[in-house]
Image 1: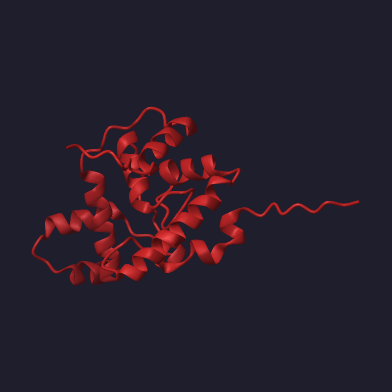
Image 2 (image 1 turned 90 degrees about the vertical axis):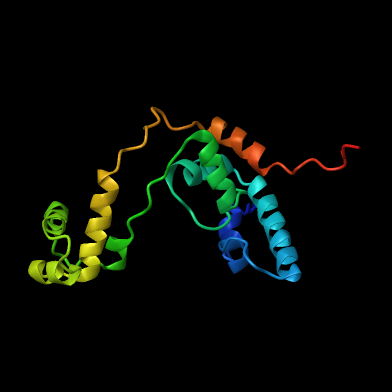
Length: 184
């Protein structure tokens, strides 16, 4: 006798649920029907995540390691931002330029671009781009990176939070608000 177990994790098995635009995007101006549908989808996804054996690791990665979009490990993007804020965690934005094919194979010296801009602050960025043989967007991107690097670094947390710390704060953030007690 052979017993077949379905070991597919919920976010893979029910990918259409987790990739639903109502779960992917943050709540904005939406109708009452869309709010009800978002609430139903969120409740279903949360129930599925609650039973996942990888929930702790998934949530820890989504809070500490990566800025993930959509509904992950029983949490929404705003909830994960709140968890990060309470834990004092900052996550660096992902540089998708290399994946998007922005890099033409030629590297440009970020310091040189910043130096040229500092030396010629009134010169249009297009002239710097022409001088270096790159696009204006490349010049802008390197100037943004140089600007971000020049700002004072935020205090670095010596150790990232543990899974237990992440789960404890997540429980506080995701916990339903108490109802029924009204002050007279």
